[in-house]
Image (cartoon, rainbow, N blue to C red; front, side, top):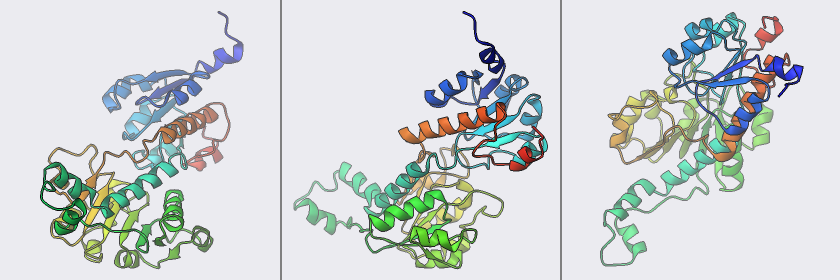
Length: 343
């Protein structure tokens, strides 16, 4: 079979994947490039493969300056997701490597997970379902009567205060569903967002993080992980919350001081929490939070829905191809690379 000249030219591009992604994304890449999937995302497995790679596609694995420097032909790094805290962005920019990501691709998936986590906490599912399986309800009386007698009554979200820390795409979608569908009162703190965004989202503006923490029945975190947001919610902050409040984190693990959170949950200073992200990922089997039954723990799965996986794979693959083919990508994390013509 004879390939057309343009097809042959593009197949000279090599795209290295640290892990597999949706077949939709792989098919998109393979139309224009050779796709190589590494045996694992570890640096030791990537180093022998990155030397002749034009692009690197990653998920949540950490990408260091050492790995980028080993990629002598590397033009672009594609992040399958939103957060960029696992990429040394400063080094990528210094080396003239464009970084693309997928903001918006998993907005609805993470928003739905956040709301499910709130409902899970409000409905006392952890404790009630466990007690039911263990036979605690196998007693005389009606089940509804036993629910009340045994202390497993639940909360309605209608009229409760939802406090959002950060008001980006995901938080706005959470606010939309919580306010319009669940009739919650929604407020948020985000000094970087304009008044028009608050007004459009129908969200009350708080002037400080402390105001959100003090007033909310449910607190949901939606900020990127940076040196400024490291342990944004720590010992001091957890002393401000109501003892009946719940903390939801679907953003990044380092935003919450897990040791302080453990103490607050164990001592009853916080009714409960739902965490999808952790300071150490994967966490060790001995993570103290595993001991508690007033915390819902899920394995960084908020964005792992059927549609979000397709959206992220499509968007990151298209971003990579745009850079390789000389087009400015839609979601470029370091535009100074493009503007300075370092590519």
